[in-house]
Image (cartoon, rainbow, N blue to C red):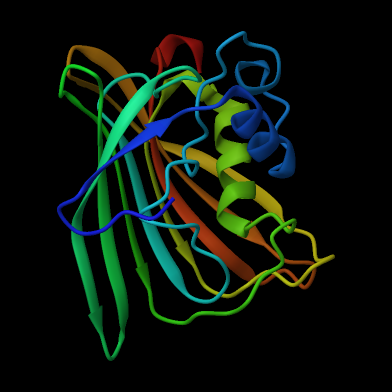
Length: 201
């Protein structure tokens, strides 16, 4: 998807696209695999294009439950900035009524080529978080990729809950998660917020 600054682009969320994306990221969550209208993974809606490899930061926010297959969104690039230190973009997603439902921000400071069929370390970390706390419950997923994941390498993920609180009338939890490579070095970090009943955690 190519989104130019200030221009609205229609985005139809396709069932098979969502399922293939989730399968590539090794997710087992039935909200992606088995639901009639699967929910979008937190890194599915890009900030103007899929971020691959290198040192990147992303921030994906949902203003309520994530969109689902069959939804038609309107994408508008709100930030499109390129500078000597990297590039930054922000794409906002609106529903049919004009309500803001999601936004995806990305900052790329080092670009490294990656194979299209190789899951990005941020996608694997998102899978870990949503398989743990529920795909429908994600509200925010911020990532910092420290280095590209070579094809064939493995990522071991871990995380913990940092706080419980109420926002927008729903109980939420914040978590921090990290992924380490086979040598035990951290390659990606993330900070996520989920709608979740603390009594159920």
